[in-house]
Image (cartoon, rainbow over all chains, first blue to last red; front, side, top):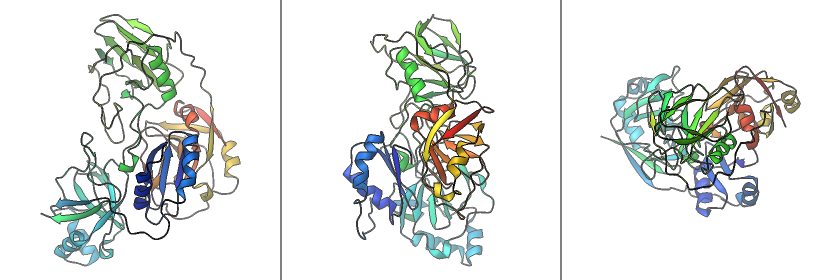
Length: 194
Length: 263
C-alpha cells in the first residue's frame, strides 16, 4: 500500500492481531488499522516500514483466544423506526428481536465510516438482513442499528442504510475525551435494554 | 488577530493533522499539500506544522495589528499593517496557503487544529467575519526570503495497490498510456476520469484500510485518489497508490486539467 504502509491479509482475527502488534509498540509505526479481514500498518517512512515488516509474520501464530480489550455496556431504548419491519422480515415478534439482539455478546471487529463507528460482530444469524434497499439521508446520533453480520451505533447524524432498532444516549465519540471513542477494536460489547 | 473579510472557497484551518487515530475511524486530515504549507510556514519563521489557512482561492484577510504573513502565491514574507487587507492572488495550484508568524491559535482536538471536512471535526470552515487569534512570536530568525516554489508537474509516480490483481493483465500499461482528467476535487478525494482498466474479479470487497494517495477503482469507471480527509476504510479495490511525495501533484490540479500516473 505504497512505500509507507502495508496491508496484511489472511488474518482470522484482525482486531486481535492489531492489539497484539500494538502491544509490541514497534518504533516507526503510525497506526495499526484492523478492518473486516485485513490489518493496515502505516509507518512514518519507507525505512520504518522496512524495519517493521519482518516482525509482522510472527505477531499471532497459531490459533488464539479472541483477545478482548475491555467490556462496554451500551444502554438502549428499543424504539427504532425499523424494529417492526425487521421483526416482520425475520418472522419473529418484536420482543423476541429485542431479546435476541440484547441477549447476544458482541465484539468490536473494527472502526470505520466515521469516528467512533465500530462494526460489532456477534449478531445472531436469525437477525441478519441485507442493508435497507434505500438508505436514509439522515440517521440520528445514537441510533443502534443492524445490517448483514454486524450491529453498530451511529456516533453522529449521517446518511445510513442500516436497520434502526433503537437509541442510546451515551456518546460514542467525543474528541475532547480520553479515549475519544467509547468502543475500540477488540472490545466486548453488550446492549442493555432500558 | 486576523479577520476573514472574504472566505473564498474551501477555506479551512489546517496543520499536519492527526495521524494515528485511523483505527478509531478518525482520518489523518491536515494540509492537502503539506510540502507547500510547511514551506509557507518557514517563510514567516514558524515550525512547518504550525496552524495556517488553506484555501482554494478568493480569500481576503485583514489584520488588526501589524502581522508578518506569507502566502504560497506571493511566496515571500510581508508585513500587513494594522487595519489593512490582503487579497490572496490567484495561483497555478488549486490549494493555497496563508501563514501568519506565530501560527493560528486554535483549540487542538486529538492533537491537531485541522478541520476534517468528512467527519466535521475541528474548527468550522472559515466564514466572513471570523476572527482568528494569532499565537506568540516564535522568536526565530527569518532564514528564507523567497520560497522556491516551482511549476506544477503533471506526472505522478505510483506503485501497484493491494487489489491490483482485480484488474485485467496489462492494466499498468493502459493506465500509464491514459491521460486522466481531474473531474472533481475535495479534501476527501480527487476523481479522475478517462481510465479503462478492465476488472476481472467479481464480487464485493470487505472493507479494508486506506491511505492518502490510494487510488480506488469503483464500478462507475472513474478512479478516486484518497486525500487528507479520506475515509479510514473502504470497500472499493485499490489498484494503485500514488507516492506520498507526488500526491500533491494530483491534488493541486484544478478540475478539467489532466495528469498522468506512472508506475
